[in-house]
Length: 500
Ligand code: HEM
Image (cartoon, rainbow, N blue to C red; front, side, top):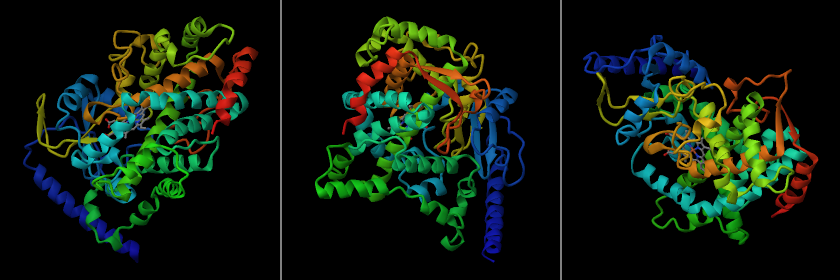
């Protein structure tokens, strides 16, 4: 019975919505890039794959050119398929291309409006971004670098002793750095709390995919009476409270170490951040800070196993600086002498942009015109990351993992030459931490381990999943380079594992 009411309600609301929509658009005041044919009501929502939309969107870019339009339910999305148009619109006109589309399910219900990544452009976003910036900016380099040093030693130890848990070790490494800075606690390998965090982050990611839930596709449904909002309990269950409660418990018992979260709660002077906002500032840091590094290391390993030629060149430089016989681990003081590793990290972010295969949607805050098109306010824009990264007009031999492409004057600007951190004002606020997390891990892993493709299970580099559900994203053989490298890890890394 309930389902029938819901269905009737849904049909009525959708009907009214479409009537209003098409009534408005009938004036043809606007002109959009070529529209990909879809079906009534749902538009293209049933064509888009539930996850990993990159290859789908790349194929459309090849067919339609620099821009195309799709409809996800009631929303109009324009895909930008070249660096040129991304720069022109999302960077040069960032003042009006930086809001987010409404997301009643993923933002309002699942996140109490508090997940920064989904916040519309405005006061709350600015305040939250400022807080995030305080903790993640280059000024905080020293705070992060000591944890990155410690945790990457633990990472090497895990690879040596549990090579079949390499993917889990990546998750622990990434999570433990951000947990140390934010909550003042470390994470263990296969820690149930880390597993829970990744599960929550992955559930959220799944819900965020275009077309994944009807209410984000038709935000007008959020106006239905609560009793008819059949999606609501699912969203409400996914709250993110455990770590905040634990932190408060530790503060009360006087057991909390100095950390960002304790300061954040203590110095919330004007009480701007209520409990839900606090929860999602901290939750966002944990999610965004863990998942991204973990997946970037997967990509390096896949790149090393499938295009091994560059590994030899990286090794030659590492061996020159740190010794060919495992004399010492690479460290922060070697950065200037290891430009090839910096180029490897940039190539990771370009090669398979599987953290945001079709970019992250922003919405336009006023009508705008560009090269003969006229976009209405509210149009959603994405940079088609997969299509751009793998376009031979943008990069020579784009499918190849080839760090040399970044050995140029922009080498030391991690944001230049690829869109891995996104464009414009919504550019990743944690890029500095993300880049350095990956740099130290990659330098040390490449120095100490070989990554060999298992011919019986070739790696499909076009399908490395971000949502891995606790299992290996692909199969690969991991071997320590030599007994001298194994001894170096034993000697230099055990203390890091045992450190409090
Ligand atoms: C390891 C590499 C990382 C990559 C490749 C990456 C990538 C991205 C991308 C593509 C976006 C969306 C940008 C846009 O909408 O234009 C983003 C946003 C964001 N990232 Fe990162 N990220 C990384 C690391 C981190 C870290 C370590 C943190 C924090 C600890 C972080 C926190 C955030 C936040 C809070 C946003 C939302 C920004 C906003 O909406 O204003 N990221 N990131």
